[in-house]
Image (spheres, rainbow, N blue to C red):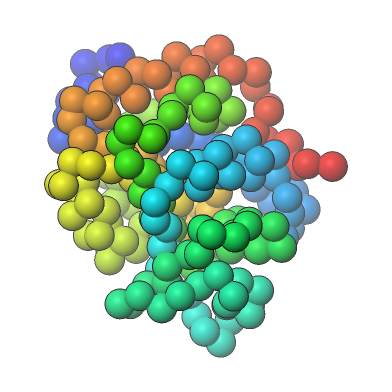
Length: 198
C-alpha cells in the first residue's frame, strides 16, 4: 500500500472497489442481470444485518418494480433482506445517474468476509473525495454507524450504480481490508465481474 493511499484511508476510513467496467454497466440495460449480482451482491447481502436505499421516487419506475421490498424508514427505505431482494429488481441495484440515491449495506465486523467478495472485483483504490457521487443523508448515516465501530458499511453510489462501491470500516480494520482488496483484485481474472450473465 502506497503511503499516499494509507494517508487517505486514515483520513476517511474507506476505500473503493470496482464491480463492473463502465462499458459493462450499460450492457443489457437497467434490468440486466450481471455476474456481479451473483458473485458480490448476493454474498454481501447474505452477510448484512441492514440495507437502506435513499432517493427513491414513489412515482418512479424503481418504486413500481421494488415497492414490495422497500419499507419507509425516516427519509429512506429499508430493503427487506428476508426475501430475495435482487431477482426481478435488478434495476434498483443497477440504477445510476441519480435515478436513485445511495444504497447503504451494513455488515457486522465479525461477519464481513472480504475473501468471499474481493476476488470477484476488478480493482481497489482510494478516492481523494469519497463523498462524491453519494447522497449526503446516506453518508451521515454511514458516519454514525462507522463511529460505533461494529460494522463494515458498503455504499453503492447514486451516480455510478453498481459500477463501483465504497467500503467503510473502523480503524485499523480498514487498512487490512484495503490491503486484502488490493491483493485479491491484482490476482483476479480480469473481466469476471464485467460480464453479463447469460
